[in-house]
Each structure stands twice: as C-alpha cells, then as structure tokens.
Length: 125
Image (cartoon, rainbow, N blue to C red; front, side, top):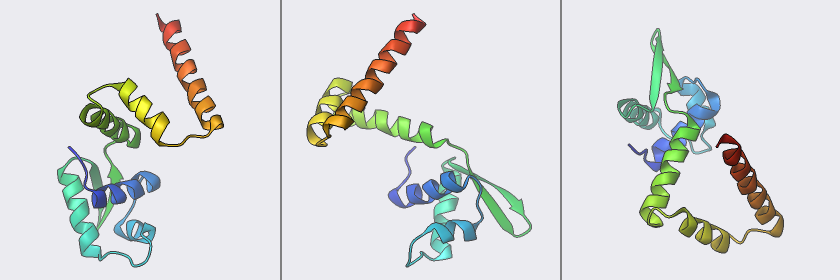
C-alpha cells in the first residue's frame, strides 16, 4: 500500500520524531500550518493503512511508526524500477548516472559503494 504525498510528509515527521503527539507533528510543518483536522484525517488514514500506530494517554494520542523508513523507501524504490525501468536495475543505473549530472567525486563514491557491495556478496558465497 502506498502513502499519498500529504501522508508521506506526515510520515516523515513521525519517523524523525519516533513518537509524537498531534502538537509535535503540527510543530514540524512550516507556516502556514495545516488545520489540526486535516492532520487528524491524514493520521486516521495512515492508521487504517497500517503505517502508524498510537498509544492513548487520556484524551491525547501518541503516534509512532509501524513501518520503518528504510523498508518503505526500499519497497517504493523497487516499485519504481519495476514500473519505469522494466524491472531492470541496469536501465535504472544508466538513467540515474546519465540524467542526474553527478560530479566525478559522486560517481567515484557510487563506484566505491557498488564495489564494496560486490566484495561483501562474494565473501558470503
């Protein structure tokens, strides 16, 4: 299941804060801040989707993430590769390296990360 852009923005705040009351979430928004009812509606939908849980403290709810940030972005990244690059990581890599105008140092860092990953996988064999 996917989050809308507005839900994703709230989710980013919850990941950042780890646990948050409505006031904490509203404080994260830049001005002009959305209405409390808007954020409340987003949170309800996110709870229904299984992304956010809460603990009730009197009349207040303390919200917390049920999905790890890395898991969410990994899943969405894999869907992006599947949907836009015919499930081909090499097509994605070609697009990424050609279209993002990476500097030489960024390309070298990317190469270092790939080489390290290859080395780690070879050790696991």
